[in-house]
Every structure is written in structure tokens, then in C-alpha cells.
Amino acid sequence: MIGARWLQEMAGQLAAVDGVLAVALGGSRARNTHRPDSDVDLGLYYERETLDLGALEDLARRWAGRRVEVAAPGSWGPWVDGGAWLTVNGTDVDWILRDVERVREQCHRARRGQFGFHAQAGHPLGFLDVAYAGEAATAVPLVDAGGVLAGLRELVTPYPEALRAAMIDNLWQVDFFLDGALKGAKRGDAAYVALSASHAVLLVAHAWHAAAGEWATNEKGLTANVARLAIESHGFAEIATRSLAYVGRRPAELVSTLTDLKTIPRPTGDVRA
Image 1: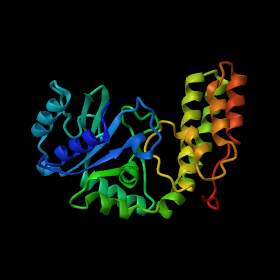
Image 2 (image 1 turned 135 degrees about the vertical axis):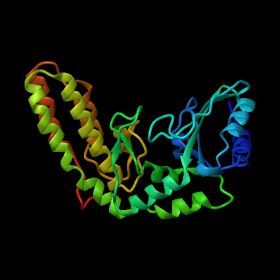
Image 3 (image 1 turned 45 degrees about the horizontal axis):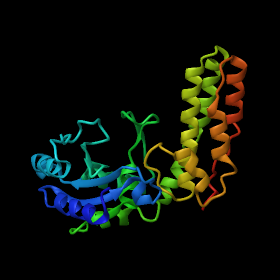
């Protein structure tokens, strides 16, 4: 198990690599929702022009005791930038690269109420671009000598009102997904119905987080977490879980699932934490 002292030491060594401007603890450990076996996610906020990948690989080898490949920016897809997976003293430690300028751009977009979901491996709904802003707002800085993380956090704290409104306005897509899926339901197309229903539910879950002023950075645990928000969500998480647990096989069952989801609780512009 990697302890707090070792984690801080690792962060200090990472911050000494050319191009790394700050290091932050992210993921479930930053939100204090982790399990004992949860990964340790470290965000490496870097400057693209000066990042020394070779030095990062040398450092990864010293910590892991074996050769570890550091994926260059863009090699994990257009949005999950790059980084490395290490195992240190039995603990999985993920180094996740974050281009500072790209993160800053998404912080400004969040302030303007702009966002989008983008195709990315590992993100079934799509990668939420302003999740970069959410990471900056919720991460725990370990090394931030130049105040980079502090400046990013200030841009998006508190949760931007324009983004809250935009997430709720985006709920028009929910009925679009559910109404469109009815055609597939009548043909017994369970896969199409399940995909459409899941997308609809996740969009509503994102909107509930926005209504509560809470950042959501990926789909994992997103629906269940609505029940823990400091806002009355009228049983959304329970209804969503029950509906998606068995969408059905026969047309009548599939239609029934979509009909139930049409009435799933959704936040409105008046709802706030």
C-alpha cells in the first residue's frame, strides 16, 4: 500500500520533470469516496512544448521496479490524453496527463455554459469535455508551486451557473432518445432500446449533478450518486436502476421500459441545491 508520505514524494519528483507544472490527486480518493482497493489517480498538468516523456519513463521505472511505458499525449484517444499505469507497493497508481492550456480552455467554456460529449474509448456516453474543468475544481493539489491549479480552480468555483442552466436545457435530448427508441422496441430490438435508454438516463444524471452544483467527470457511479446529492431528486437513482436492470426482450416489455423512463424525475431550471 502506498502511503501519504510516499505519494507526496512521488508528486514532488513528478513536478521536477521538465514540462510538468503541477500534480494533483484526483478520482475517488480526491472526493473521499474511494474503497481500500481503489486506484490512485494523479493528474500531471503539463506544458506540451516542454514535456520530457523520457524523464517520466525513467521515473516510472524507478517507482514500479520495471519498465513502464508512458503514453504520449493523444495516444489514448482524443480526450483521455495519455499517461502511465504503475503498480507501487501493491497499489495501482495512474499518471494521467492533462495539457494545461486545454484544461484552461474547457474551464472558460464551462463558465460560458458550453459543453459537449465526444467519442472516446472507455466512455460509453462520450467524454464530457468540461470534465477537465471538473477535475481541476475537485482535485487535491499535491504540488502547485506556480499556482496553476489554484488559478484553474478559481475559474470554475463555485460551479458555473451558465453550465448548470445549459445541462438542464440539454434535457430535450432525453425525449428524443426515448421516442426514437420506440421504433426499435416495436421490432424487439433490445440492444437499441438499452443503448438509447442508458444515454437518456445518463443525461438526466448529469443534469441532476449540475442542478446540485456538483461536478461529474465520468459515467462511473453517476446514476447511483444522484441519491447522495444535497438535492431532492425524487427517487431518480432507484427508478433508473430498476428500469435499466431489465429493459425487456419482447416488444411489449421494451415499450413498457421506455414508457416508465419518460416519467423519470428530471431537474428543472428552478431546482437548486
